Length: 521
Image 1: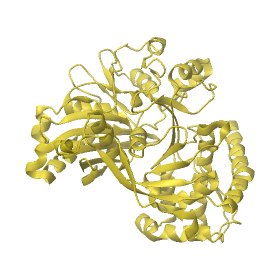
Image 2 (image 1 turned 180 degrees about the vertical axis):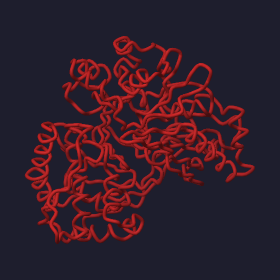
Image 3 (image 1 turned 90 degrees about the vertical axis):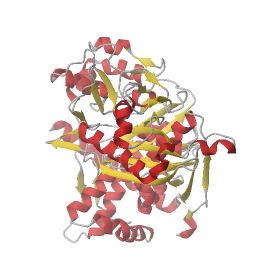
Image 4 (image 1 turned 135 degrees about the horizontal axis):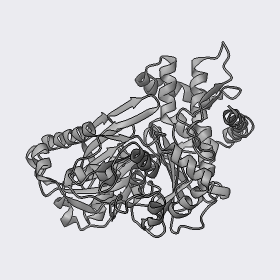
């Protein structure tokens, strides 16, 4: 189907025009991306933002039952080791690293105390321990006020409800400061506390239109007014590396520390998403969809599951929604089937992709509902369960794998409808994609066919970490550009009609039936 896939040879982003004579001034910068599954420390050469070294490690987690915490001390230690590896790689030129920029997941954070001690664990963003407070807000009707003020749908993942759970579990909040993960890492490095707006937008305590922490919400829950740090522009220098950090890593004491903010926003900046005509699809363990707008607009209904917030420029507003499970579904399926992950993604997925293009699965009745960690919009539920319906004794393995891929894409279609609203894809030029999906042609083509608009893979390795560098370098007035190739997946009208019919006549009715069953049980 070569006619459906085009490959524009090159895509360049120039975030700021800086005289050629200044480009030598910042040879290197480091981007840190604290993610759900992995954390990355990426040494970049400027102005190109090309990676020189990438240190990647599993984000240290402690899992017990259905709960999960980041191991904070181990995370800090590994980030410092990554920074040290960057200095070792550069040798004598380590003195030319002038900034470290941090991005992270949104809802996880750390309590920092006046004596500079901090909580040893951080609740994972998807953990449900704040559920009793979110349910109470929904039952009392206060969820409407929360959404009116913050633009964040009431959900157990929010930082606000994590804080309330921690208080009930014995944590002292008076005098403490809640720092979301990127803000915390920046504090470790430079000693200055601050709150990035894109991360504040995920707390359920930030007044998104008034651009301040909401005293109304803090007072409602009896929280200290100082529990959230002052707001700081994305990419602005927080300070320089502390002496002890310099001694431990080999980086210079002139190196500035910045926070670019939420991981999806940093990735969007790397791809230069345009307002209204483009969306960003950020893929990974979970999957998010981001839209930018110049004004906030009307407040949607209190039942809306789209999160509103601020973008890295501080002026543009965001509409964002996510699925708790995306790439995780593929990992689960391969484990369940006893298949080697690396060999599948090297060759196996190409065979399933070829089968899809040759219509091998057009009559398949197998449906996968990817609620491995609950469901996403439009009916978000942390208690939803995954399902694989239609198995027969003769069902081949490749058909199971195709069902998992198509189920993830069907769930994405519901997410898409929630973000774009009744206008649908009208006026939308394309959806830009970052993350693991760019190396997965089946995932890309299925979504293009189902949504009916081009999906463009932005082949930016470590897009979040490099986007983080780009945000901060641009804010600091330094020369920076990001160059990357793209691959365009165009929708097939015939496949689109077939997928859409299956989505509406089979997938959605099954989802609704299971929702009714789960509600009754």
